[in-house]
Image 1 (cartoon, rainbow, N blue to C red):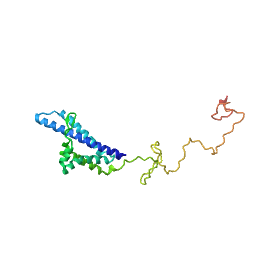
Image 2 (image 1 turned 180 degrees about the horizontal axis):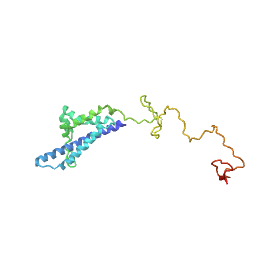
Image 3 (image 1 turned 60 degrees about the horizontal axis):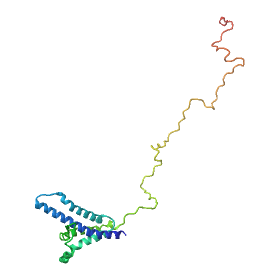
Length: 223
């Protein structure tokens, strides 16, 4: 299908380009000749022929550079080269077949001018050279629709063993001797303790103030 559309594009672009180039060349030539004749110039007079030549260049660029199909540039190139090649065989017959009394918006359309000065031959060869590009004969690469995983690369580094959210990564484990855990200094439950001194049942620890020394009973201080 793409070859068909490219064929139709080349079939239309060739004559349209011929007309646009004729209008642009004739308009530019007559404008410059007029400037030389009157000794002054106005660049606004070149806008119209420049538009004709610009549109012709865009059409030729689309047909000659887009990777749609080589049929379009092939057809357009052959159509543009044929009139000039016919000048080698029967020049008067070729010139008689080209109309010379056509007009566009009141301006004359000298279609013989691009043939006589070789402009069509030059453009036609450019389009024909675009056919020999190997890339134009290939289809555009299609995106892969399957969900097949990509083959593993042997030279690729192994994936990290930690998640991307765990940053910074944990430090590597060190081979250090075990240390004793910190404690509050309490003795272990299995450590035996000395028994506390027993109190007599008749004496309460709160019945009398503490005594700081034993004195004889007959001492005068106890009285």
